[in-house]
Image (cartoon, rainbow, N blue to C red; front, side, top):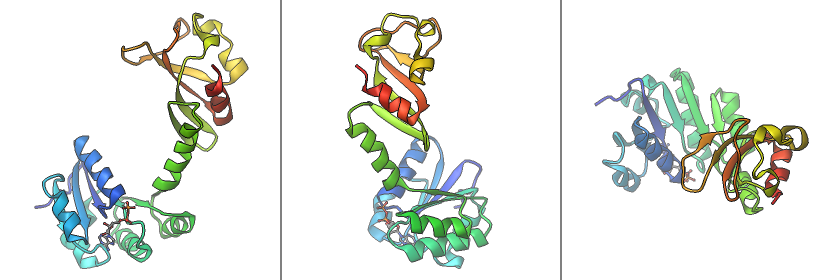
Length: 220
Ligand code: ADP
């Protein structure tokens, strides 16, 4: 059975990262073909993904048989086995897969993948480490660096802006951050505007340059 349709993704390597990615894609309604050389892993994913196959992605005939070249998007989630990661990337590029993502375990690995022509190289461990560093500092409840130097954080409203309509605070000028959304106690998230008045304990989403976001998140 071929599942290479518009909204489908092939995930090669069902280790911790690939497996979590594949399940999240399924939950979001995307068809997923999972591939791994490990029989136990393949068994354990049976029924969880649209299709799971035990196969070696470093073999061209295998990729063709599975119609991997007909997928619009393929993610190489092989980290530890550098050779397998690179060979797979090289084959997928040769097969002209339109969008190839690949996980890299370090900068060297990432550089090779980029040189080969992989469209998007991701560094899950590095990115998560950086994100957790911000969370461990205790300032933000959630944190996302959108690009180096620009971030979004979820924080508790600091006292200095409680009770004043956002338009009348000097947030942007003095602190360099913008409040984009807020959430009172148990209510849902709402977009913030100039008239928004925040209360004690409200959660807010702020965006701005990373250093300004960090500094603002430390305020009480
Ligand atoms: P993680 O840190 O996310 O667990 P790993 O690099 O440890 O990532 O896991 C990669 C997965 O990719 C493993 O399950 C491994 O069996 C699989 N894998 C490695 N080489 C190949 C290959 N040539 N073809 C298919 N799957 C592979």
